[in-house]
Length: 170
Image: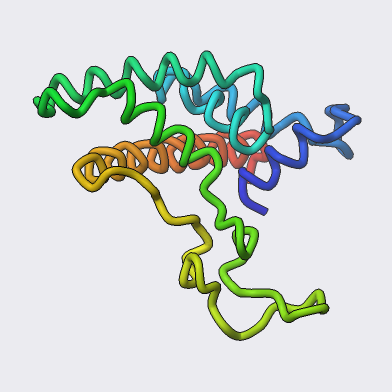
């Protein structure tokens, strides 16, 4: 089970006891500890996307806007590409990127059946993500920021797994 599944399970758990038999809180603590290495965004990303914590969204959005503005300045984006809009679109898409037609499975359901067909989803073509809808001249900037969000989440998950492995004394 990956750190995302562990985090989601623990965030929805009604029992966060921490002893030799119960370890639901471990992934929460591990994700919280990696925040320093991702400018505080790692835990926020996990809380908002995987923990469905809407109360943390505004904090995440403000921090993400600041980060995107710094990147836009460093990379000298054209004036018509505003960092604020790129940040809003990229974060909104990243949080809710699952294809709605197949519910992120990548395959269509057989009619009147709980079984997946062998045919890839027509909307996402088996990619499991909904298409990014935006103006063509904004697309590359948004995709670049989506890669950054994915990288921050991967980095945070990797650091959390390292922390969990060390704590388990493997």
